[in-house]
Image (cartoon, rainbow, N blue to C red; front, side, top):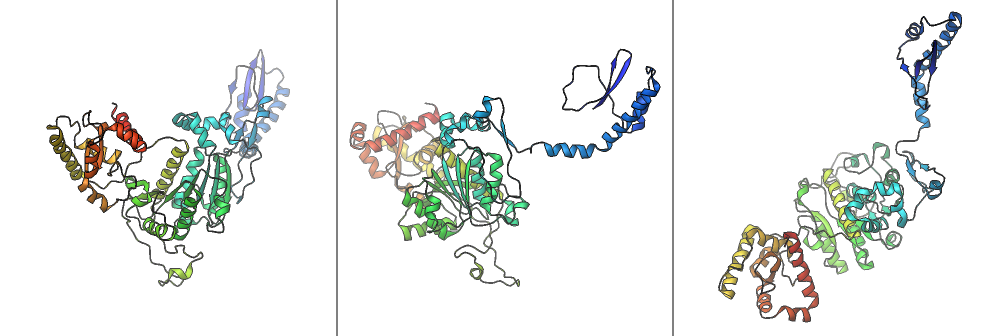
Length: 517
């Protein structure tokens, strides 16, 4: 900055750098566009030695002109000396002792593989770091410190890093998962940029796993990230699934590979969440998380369900994310190099992988990935979330259940005055509490059209006959089960069927909390 200060009868012209800290003085900033303006400004009647001042003026004019003309070059040079915007200051223990901090800059855009950060903290100690705890402060406020600590010390494997997997992995990273294994054999393509979480045009041709690792290192460098550019199959199962991961995310869109992975997770006792088809859909309000047996309107999950049952004897027990929306488009016909429609299998690079293209609205796979991350995070933090059940009743069915309850109360007690629920509350009890099934039924086999048939044999009855028929005292049972229930006492149930008793009372306790009883 060029300026003047008045000191007695002497006028000084000073050139100051912005980085220099000066003592408080009366400073008048000069903002002149040419050296001529500068010369005119400094000619004052206070000069006693005109010759000496003239020489100074010439020198300062040259300096001013050089400063003005070289400002762009100087600015560029200064910017090169500054750390990049994405640099992360890591406060190490030894640095804190002498009042200094270490600066670690992310890898450059052009790298396809990353070196490990020279400074890595034990996941157990991550939340003690001031920068990490501030970055994750909203998560800590939501889950609580101890629950977030479980997330921070967890290990998650994400297989398939396209539109779904990249968003799931990105949100797991941003939420503080301490260790990630990213697996995909494919590369970033130009056409995948409409749905990928972090890839840019400069990443096209880069393996997806390395692309994510590169970008992730500047978002949360404390995370231990391992990226494997490989295809999941029987030969790579041990390398990918070993190490006791806390969760596995299946974001694969190939049936053979998906079935093999899910079967391996069940065999190894690993928690897994599987994504079904996100392509050709547009309605985010119809996305659900439920057991594989409950997924409907999805050709991929239907094929996976059949293959798991046929080849591995697995009936269900695997949570999946799917859409209730029917696909809006089908696979596009495959055209070869000459433009004629040809057999897609002739062009498969990997056997069993789809060559034909399905239209994709990028927002839907992104939402799939975000929901998967949310599901896993709440499980890791042991934070209870009650997913909306997949119940295919309509209001007529709930009216039938309500009327059936009134008639049953009049038959047993001579009056229905103790019925304290309306149709809307019956819907809550049947759908939210009992998922449209008998309280004794944990198998959940009746899905789809089977649910419509099951209402013909279900009714609501009091759990405790000494209390009114309210939302916190109604259970859904089959007709024969209802007769048996009303012929016994809660004490007998608690003694003979303690697990059933605990499960029902826990469910009804949820109703008390929901309705503020």
